[in-house]
Length: 271
Picture (cartoon, rainbow, N blue to C red):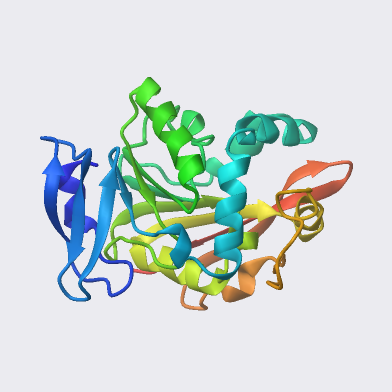
């Protein structure tokens, strides 16, 4: 984690500013601790990644799917490549969404960055500045960290939840989420948080599987089979976007055999 990143980090619980202590590293902090003096919580930095959650703190669907994605991270890259074949391949499927972003060398936040499968396509654009990625799965982030280290990309990673983002308000020029919101504990809170951390006039793009496809994925043995009493809402969350947002648009994506197998919800935060 770069030391300069501290300027726009905040406590995910109370949104107070954080201080850095016991750090190791010069320009980048590889090990250390972030401290909130307001609620007296501490967050560890491990291998350059700030950890804003601990697995035993998670509840509901977040707890279930954090565990699932830790296991699934071993095969996630291969799974997505195969899954996107019916839609013209991975490049076409991902660019169908990423092309909707307005990249102007600003700061981009990807919520649920996973193992970094969108990064090669993001960095093809000369308009990409710094990328910041958050995910609930430590396993996914470990693979993403290895990936960006090999490529030398300017990406900062954070372990946390979409419902409590550890960033100050108005911090990002673009906010992106692809896949996963169907299985968040609270879609509403996650969308509110994405709006909060986006700068005025910023574009927010959210995409996921269609309700039909999500229900099929939910039946994958050992990954999404048991919800332990937690209901999974696979409906498109367009009704959760506040009416105050501008240029709200929903499109079908990932078309195959005459049907759309995903949706893309995009809108702009007003000035």
